[in-house]
Image (tube, rainbow, N blue to C red; front, side):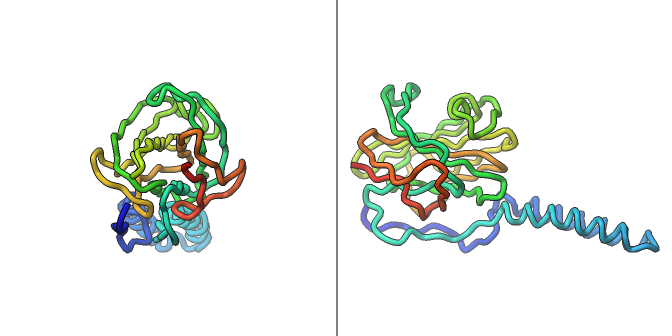
Length: 229
């Protein structure tokens, strides 16, 4: 799609976690200081530091936001929209938008994965639709249709419609979608963010060739998951 536009900011911690990490760090610091001065025995302080310090570091790891650029030509390529592992590569009947069979590739994200989501293809955002729903475990097949999810339809430069579905899981209760209808989008740009464990589905034409297999790990914006015919 001509010259690709780079919009990523030079950030290391995702903006979705900046406030939470800052506030929690201040609270932990205050409690730590109180424990240090209130007890003659330093044990309560060090127990607190080990337990809650480890929890804060896990949260910091969760909100990390690596700066990535896909190397090479992106024409007709479909890249992984998320870090995680492949849990579905199969033909499915999609009756909400396409009313025909599609190749669905699904990526499950554990709480240890980066939870930023990238656009899997270059194109133009056709629409964004949020659907309330249940909170089944994200790796279950019924999660794709029954769980709360956000759908982003992207039309590629060749006129192919690609559906990206961000799905909430048993723990994830917040889906953030940055995509806006009518805007052009590019690989390397962030589509959104999902908190805690969840998954992302990509619905492709049956003519697309899958480049991944079940349980294969993926790196968002780096792993090629398919190529359009």
